[in-house]
Image (cartoon, rainbow, N blue to C red; front, side):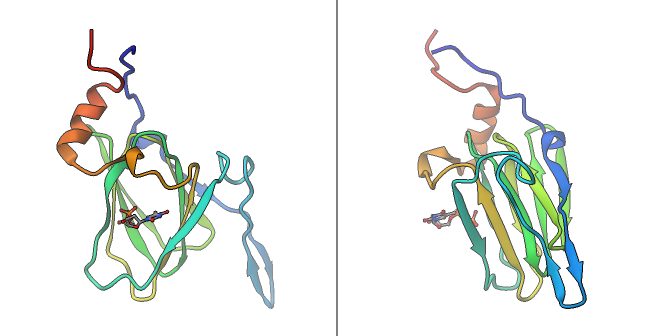
Length: 148
Ligand code: TYD
């Protein structure tokens, strides 16, 4: 198999201002495939009851794209492409963060009661995870077969 360079950067991860329908009885923000979300959503999950001081993430994905929203409370998302790092604070239910494949991420500093909503482009697949930072460095150098 041909070696493929991983060229995604933390600067390809974008903050998206989501539409908000506002009236005096509250707000609604809707997320739609291919419109507000820049990929087809195949899985939705959410992190909650995160104990104070706990860190989540600590991995990269080979192919998975994610769209993260703090639907309640706040937390920081640390993005790392092996060269550049970026920290994004998510603290509004109408702000989303699109994370492209090949980016190491950690989620830290959860406020009490925070809920982290994640829309994902693929179903759960442990094979898509890179959980070791050294392996992430190797992945950033190339993917595919090591032959040839
Ligand atoms: P993980 O993605 O490592 O969590 P985080 O990035 O938030 O720290 O997943 C933690 C555990 O939950 C792991 O054992 C796999 C399981 N899990 C599922 O079964 N399905 C899922 O969709 C997700 C995201 C995790």
